Every structure is written in structure tokens, then in C-alpha cells.
Image (cartoon, rainbow, N blue to C red; front, side):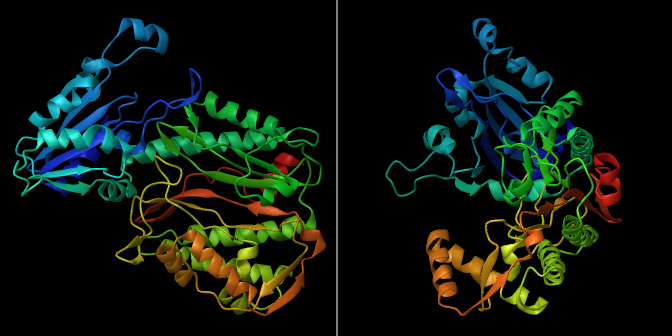
Length: 473
């Protein structure tokens, strides 16, 4: 239970004096009385490690010292016969380091006592749980002027930004869980490579891989597995996994295990039961070059922005050399022609969530990497078979201005304007080399930023052409 204890201590140091209100996830029903497997809310788990639904936590902080008050489901033999054993209040005290434990149903009744003298309350007031549990509870818990001149003597603060900042830096316990998730994930990817053959279905490969995840201690998948053969490798979030695998095509697998609530995130692309063809090898080597460059950039003081810009430059050079774009490297970047073949970010934070908490900016400036941050590095090139000829607009586009306008106007209005600008621009028609159509390659690893340089937690998943072909051919 050390991770959540550390998290509460760090949060208390940030707040000084006040109280934190936070709520667990809930059971979501799939249909009738059948439910989706429960997974705890990540922020709630981060601060408590409590694994069950229907729970509240009040963390009272005095002089930078936290007290954890947990409200949990009562033990109930009849209900436990149906739904499984509950930890109960005794377990909350003995196993989860709660200062005091209460019945889940007594939350609003006890809130007043816990918040006595508190003037700063931290909660997620954008959450439906705030409306359901906290608004009325706070109105009764914290005195306010009945004449209406002052609603409440407490100030409400948003909790999410504080937790997001804390979750960015992983402690040693969190890194150990992430490393285990990564080790399990590597084993699964290797098994997938071994079992891939023409005539099998994508879901069969997924099953072999996911069995390894579970056999090695994963509680669940980090996210729905992407097992994309042939043209499907060009679909970024493909998860149908129902099509047959054909010899000579590529199989892109983006899949990972979750261990102790922490997720890995790994992608490998490899040939189906034989060696890479020459065109496949050409694209693969270019993506691998960009990925190695990206991994080298996960160092203290660098930023995700620089990492992405360096990746775009590397991949744009590759696209020019491969004949995918009509103009030179500078034009490919400034006119965003690369976006036809690389349309996502280079990486994202990794932790309790596969796309983990934390902004990539601080006060409008790129956030610098620090010791203990964990990111993915995942460049790709996707040559969609549905676009054998592309009309590239001859108009300079600034990604920063595009993001700012999308924030200002909203995604829908901004994209309409973007389409109008592009449609009014001159274009240059370019035919994509036929041998490259339908090839999609992504390579992704999980990297810790340390004071001694980047540490690749998933480097044992075969990645060079030689390593992969030693298994697949």
C-alpha cells in the first residue's frame, strides 16, 4: 500500500490545509443484469488503492499531514453470496491504511464532522458524482450565512490538476509495476509472432497473445488489442480483429497487459509467415530510424514538442525518399503533407491509464521531461490503399495555430474552416508508388526518462528486421 500512501503525502504537501473529496468508479451494466468488468477510477486508486466500487474518500489535511477517511460497502453475507466477498470497514483499516472507515451510506451524514473548520475543499466539481454526493453534502457540512450574503465559508478547488501533476512523476513502486506490465507484454508479443501464419484469423493471434498476458499475472488488458493484418494496418484504432491473415502481408499488433492497475503500450509490425518484402522493409527501416531517434530524445530538459518535431522531420525525409510526397522536406513539413501518412502524436504519458494524466505544456510552454516521467515513442507510416492518388494542397499550415483555433472555436467549426481553406488552395496531384499501397507500420516502446538517459522497458520485444525474421520466417 506504499504507492497511495506516498501519493497522499505528496498531495498534502501541495495543499497544506484543506480536504479532498473523491469517489470510486461504479459498476456499469452491459444489458439487463450483466455488467462490464469493474475497473477502479484511476485517480481514486492513485490516492487510496481501494479496489471496490461504491466508495468515497475524504482526505483531511492539517499542517501538510493527511488523514484518510474511507466510506465503503458494508459486509453483507447475502449480497456477498451473489457478488463476491467485500473488504468492509475492518479491511479498510487493516489493509488500506485508512484513519477511519465508515459505511458507504453515511457519507453525507459524516461529511459535516470531517469538514469542521475546513476552508479549502478540493474535488472534481465537473463530475456527476459532485452533483450526486457533494453539492448537498457541502451545503450542510460547511456553514453559510442564512441571510444569503455569503453562500459558503469554504473555497472549492479543482482536484484534477493537482493529481495530474503528481501522477506525471512515477515513484519506484509505480515503476516496478510498469516494468512488470512491460515484461508481460513483451512475452505476449513474442508469442504472437510465433503463432502468426497465413489462414489464421486476427482474433486467433489476439487470443494466443492475451493468454500469455493472463498466464503471467495480468489482471486485464491495458486497452482493446489491435491486431491488424494487411490493409487494416493503416487503420489507427482498428479493433475488429475478425479478418483472415494473408501470406506476404504485414501484421500490426498494438496491445498490452495491465498489471497492478498500470499499463504497458507496445506496437510491433511484422511479416505474416515469411520475410519482409523489399517495399515493406523500406518503410519499416524508416519508421525504425525515426523511433530510435525519438527514444534518444527522452532526456531530462527535452520536451514532447521537440520529440514530435524531430519525428516529423525524420519521417518527412523518409517520405520524400520513398516517393510518397511530391515536394521537398521543407514543403512536406510546412504544408503538413506528412499528415497524409503520419497523423498522430509521437508519444503520450503512460501509467495508471494507457494515455496517462498530465499535460504536455506548462503555462503555455512545452513541458520539459523530468526524471521519473514515462512516455511512449510510436512513430508510424500508413499508406492507405484507398488513396492511390492524392491531391496535396499548396498552402502552409501551422500546427500551433490549428490547435489554438480548434480550442477557440471548437473542433467542428474549426475543421470546417480548415476544409474550406484547403479546398480554396491550389493543389498538386501525386501518384503513390503502387508497391507501397496498403503498408502500415508502427513501432512503439515504453520509455522512462531518468537522470542517466532513457530506459526502454520494452526493448526485449523483437524490433530489428533480423530479430523479427528469426521468429517469423
